[in-house]
Amino acid sequence: MTLHLHPNEFAQRRAKLMQTIGKGNIGIIAAAPEYLRNGDTHYPYRQDSNFYYLTGFPEPEAMAVFAPGRPEGEYILFCRAKDPVKEIWDGPRVGPEKARVEYGAQQVFPIQEFETRKAELIANRNVVDLKPHVAEMRLHKSDGEIRLMRKAAEVSMQGHTRAMQCCRPGLTEAYLEAELLHEFTQHGCRAVAYPSIVAGGINSCTLHYTDNNAELRKGDLVLIDAGCEYQYYASDITRTFPINGKFSTAQREIYEIVLAAQLAAIEQIRPGLPFSETQQTVVKILTQGLTDLDILKNNVDLKNFYMHGAGHWLGMDVHDAGAYKINDVWRPLEPGMVITVEPGIYIAPNSKDVDPKWWGIGIRIEDDVLVTANGHEVLTAALPKTVSDIEALMAK
Ligand code: GLY
Ligand code: MN
Ligand code: MN
Image 1 (cartoon, helix red, strand yellow):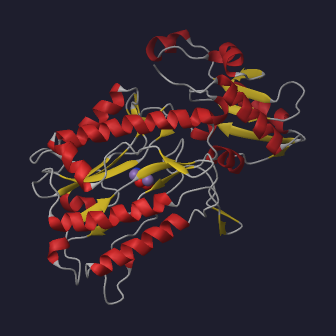
Image 2 (image 1 turned 90 degrees about the vertical axis):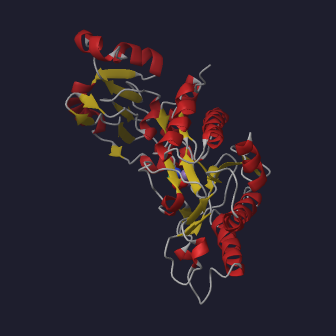
Image 3 (image 1 turned 180 degrees about the vertical axis):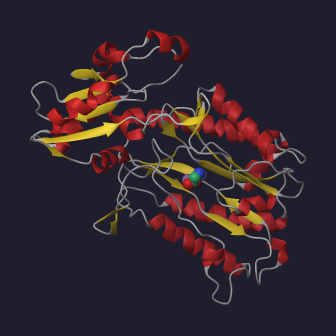
């Protein structure tokens, strides 16, 4: 069964937006364009997140106008007209009539009329940028949105589990990617939230590696950072595990540091915690761990081995909308926000002054965490991440 947001939710969002922008003002937002790949072939279409958030309307070549207090209608939609010939090739279009009935617009016009009608719409009104207002709304997830994010998390966990169970030396990175996509697609997620990273051996030290074409070798780790998109909502999970099912001593020593940092950062998540605190915790624990192993010494910067943030907002986009600071101050977490927690250690081959036994080890562990009224809930908690749980799953 496919889960959907209740149509009322889109109406509530529009009502809230109208209130925020206020009478006398007007906001306009465009649907995402279609992009030609070559010839007559397009890239898979994905509606613009803000546009979808406010309209639920899935087609390109559309414009939504929000004009609070406008007597003829506050929510005006422009969309493609019906076209029986084109619809033979591409399937049915919503069309203006159905758009009014099913998508709640008070007035709907063919997209061709947008430019001429725009002048009349904005006359005597202030045009405001909707982006910051929608970003603020998107940052706080409703129960309906959380339901979809739970589902995205669940499907992604199934993909990661399958990849761990199938993994063995001699396969390619792409083979594991296909295992992930098998679960995603079969469970209704034809889009990934971002290109899957399947990075064996030293490729794990390339943060956004997506070639995914190398052979997986016995004795190496593989880092998988992959998440599906379910009904416009993202998940974002990273697991790192040994290709032959057993961590070496060196791999385990680094892994335990990353895991300790991740668990400590997650543990503190609750309303009121400044967003920056997870990074502070991660930096502290990684610094101590790498110092204890004599990898970090002589005032070497941790950035040589950990060069990204500990997380980001997660929602319709993998790096979701929403300001991280307000008046230059890190904002406190609030119930309904969803963040990732994703520390890592990456020891590039030939790292100077580092014992070669650590070279090429790249580890990241990433989970999706919902801030609740009293603390937090890890949406991706069911996916194994301790050394013993991963080894047990892979031995099955
Ligand atoms: N997968 C992108 C990220 O973790 O931020
Ligand atoms: Mn992430
Ligand atoms: Mn990720």
